[in-house]
Image 1: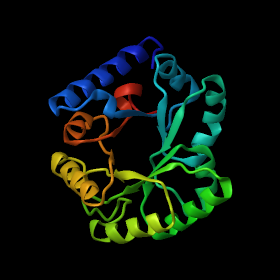
Image 2 (image 1 turned 60 degrees about the horizontal axis):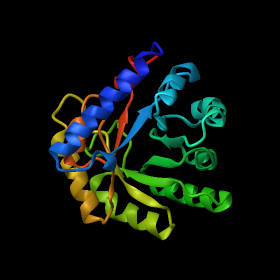
Image 3 (image 1 turned 120 degrees about the horizontal axis):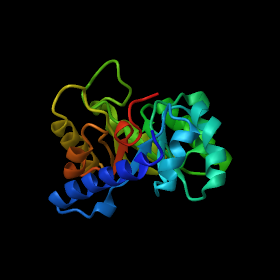
Image 4 (image 1 turned 90 degrees about the vertical axis):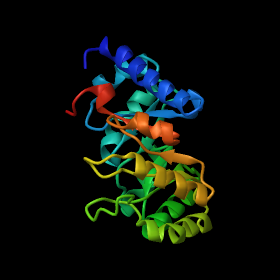
Length: 222
């Protein structure tokens, strides 16, 4: 991405979030934009940091560990979110590196994260990922299993921030976002991590508190 594109793209996405929030009688400040920097190197990320973006999302622990410590040294105040699937054996590294983990989806991961947090004395926010479209190829907790997983996460004292989903591709996402919002309300959770480059405005009108936007900010994936 040319360096002078970053401020324009960031401003366009923030303006779209603000429009969608106002349509829903919400404050634009109630929505956090997560710039999804997976597959993009430090040189592609720096222009967005320079334009004022401070919250970023990565899919893989190893990739994030390779580029973010140096970027954070350059610019204090960066918040880093893990938005991809997390293997239980990477829980220690994830807890050390990330400020939020968006894909808690099974009991074994709840246990691994609780141990890692106790050991590190650090407690990143946790979103439980729901397999909102019941798709066998996708990660996420089945809707029917959500109450039990949330009960285990609370018993393990994970800092539960909310729910996360990725709707099925190629269909209208609004009903899936609405279902996630209802599940969050039913379980007393305020956070809704939902919406990506193609559908974040819809997600905001339905209550998203975190939107995960990559290509609209960075262009096509490397």
